[in-house]
Length: 457
Image (cartoon, rainbow, N blue to C red):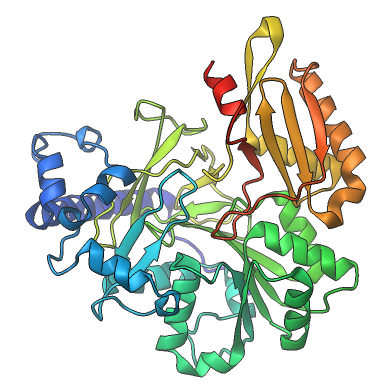
């Protein structure tokens, strides 16, 4: 199926910017009228006189500590929301009969609670489905926007014991479209991998969704003859999805892979096109790459963080919210013809390592570069690098990957030497990677003790 032609990029860009600006100002007016916390926080900002970048930034700690004054519905109380969330079986049900409740995993240090209204949820559904590349949409029309055409068998492998966005949105779709229930399967990412493989083989999904690291692990089991499925579509989310991971999974399963970028604060921020680039939903999302002082970072450069504005959700306004992700806006237009801007995401799951280079001082290593080196040169995917000291790194591999431990260690040592770190040791550990409560795998991280103190010193 050929993609539909896109209108001229400049026209779309101007219309999108005007539409997004109108929505942003309207959201701010709404929030100031109904959110005591935000009205006070923005008390010195006036939309008729000040520019957008002068609007004070918000963050998770501020919103969570003032939760009852942040939300715009005075019937919403944090204590009641927490009581609702205490039962994981309510994931996918509506709080007060009208709001979805999602929690973040707390990879940034503090878990968050985020409410989404009906208009926002409807917007997310359109963005994640109708902006999908046509080839993928034709292969698998999940999650049920075209009920007369979609006899898909869909499986999700994710964290099931909390109100995370993935499982909550999944179950909400099943509740809205009951006819899908008999053609869906949800599996816990914490189940033994052998059991997961058995259940997937018996179910034979045409659509398989999980975290990239889990899709890679399942692909590895497929290559070893422990899993026998032929999905036509893979959906990766929750973690960065590298080109090497994509190739490995697509080649193994003979499937097309889709990737989107979202979070608990905004389910769909960007979606991938047929060229493998993430297109920002800039008519419904504002994403501002910024440095450590929240100053704008130009396109083509990696940011320290990003400020997110969700233009679709009004019950819990996310406006110039410090997301924590490192992103880079692309400078060249995409060959697919989609005029919406594209970006790359390094993510907040992984830590930036700083190692002692002796006379050269502290050397900063990008987690994206480290993981790419191990994938491309060592052929390993399920791993974790832990900085345990100023000159010490620990390499943890899944049991199935340990046969490649010597090669992976050699690749790391060479990579470190090339960056002026010949004295940094790499210790292959017998410990498996530590997975977050949400089921996500942070592949590059600082140890809880020692390394963090060394970096600050």
